[in-house]
Length: 341
Image (cartoon, rainbow, N blue to C red):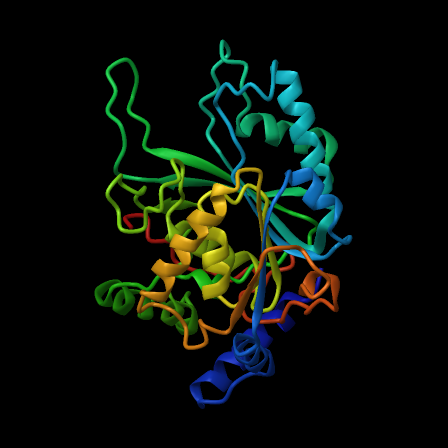
């Protein structure tokens, strides 16, 4: 493990540059990457067939929202579901870079009589058969949902984040939440806390309070289990970097591709259902009508195939050593956690 005092000294040095209005080399790299055209392949095929085409260690982030907690004709028994999931989990591990991450959506509402898979099944497989490490079990807490009379109404979904190695990439600064002025002033008086950390905002923790999409939400494109843009945005910002490759092989609503375009990442979207491309077209329309995009949002190209022009088959951009990137170890700094937030 690196010398923590050296690491913290580097952090303080970068903050000094910021205060003077100067940019660190790694920040200039990120700025320049936002100006580079991003490539996005959108294909209709089986996830395992797609993964077989990808080079080893070529992907920074996989966003994975597989079918779960449902009975489907594709799998006669639970063992068949697990065998299928094991195939793409092993392939996903192969294609991830050493700094790579995979995020798995899925509920823990296992129904024994249904014989269907859920996140418990996937985590169990990873524990038994993978060298990847469980970094966080994220609780997505949403205020809106169905009512219930025979059990406590469900208001959360679990998201499992695995890192390929201890060198997994995480940019905390990209996902911090600002303090309100009263809280900020209070923390600034606390001598145990670094002022620069307080200025940057709070760690959002592994409990994310974000609403689900209502049936009449403007973000809706027609997919029944569409995830909110804000959830995918936090994942892409924190677990990948500009110019890296993001893959979603259960692309569904197309939201991952949209966020990848907005955040300056290359992407590959795959789904067995061709209607995914219609959903993505609606996402692109929503994106183009949005006022929240970065300046270079039109600097991208959509491909209907996975061709050799995609950056995944070329030289990979290495992750920048930016503030907030942790190599799997704590930097030992003290930061406030706003438990009331």
